[in-house]
View 1 (cartoon, rainbow, N blue to C red):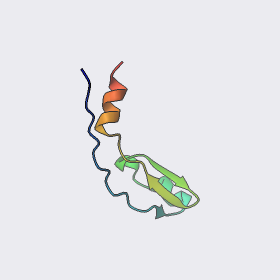
View 2 (cartoon, one colour):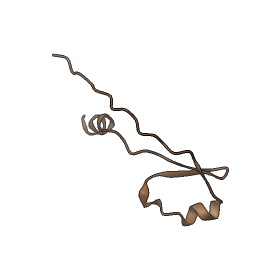
View 3 (tube, one colour):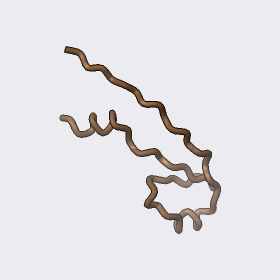
View 4 (cartoon, rainbow, N blue to C red):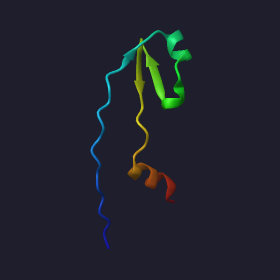
Length: 58
């Protein structure tokens, strides 16, 4: 019996925000994982359903 995988379309990710390192440290990080690099802040999207399923199966 074979499994069939469906891939969901990705959402549009906004372009990186620019801010200083100090501003980034004070930023509300509750909205997800963020990374600051050379003044640009990028947000990592949450894992998809397929990833969560793979991560929870042994």
